[in-house]
Image (cartoon, rainbow, N blue to C red; front, side, top):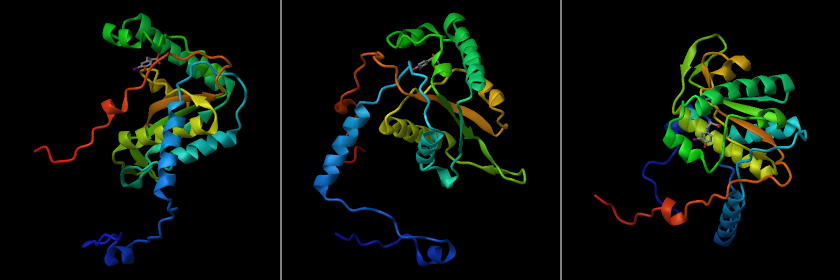
Length: 241
Ligand code: IYR
């Protein structure tokens, strides 16, 4: 079924001014689409945030592939406003763990998180101990680029930075799970120490960090349930107003 477009994209003027290429796309039968859709959702439903990793090494190439996947995320004006900073160096991981635990000690023990927040976290049992930051073979920190720093030093504007980085983070988590490793989106708060420890410039701000590795054998995870589809999907068939 070929829909008729009054305003085809790209317009001939646009195509004359900027390069366009044919979409690389594999057409599948609706049966295959349905099977893949269900299989993917089932696979993602097996993903869990993990807080106990082994120290088994993971190849740098595998981390690079996860970042390559994440960096395909759609972004505002295709600015790709992110930098993934990865480390497997024990001294760097130790510095990150120490600084994270210092901040979290204030959060948990110094009452920087209010009672409602601590209550919400109680079933997860998180606390200020972050040993996994030293034990997991890799820590990957996603920095958002608040503005673009061009090679000559001028600033360029980035757009929808948080949204873009959120999508990139989602693809990173998906890549790590799909390849057979585990991670935890971790946001020790505040995260400014990551800028210092990892030597980043002022245009970058830590967005989220990911310890990555193999889950410890027999690791337990909270027995949480996901919201039923009926709670998270609303299909609208008529305009409401
Ligand atoms: N950043 C803290 C607290 C924390 C907050 C939320 I919201 C979580 O879902 C989990 C933890 C920490 O990492 O412990």
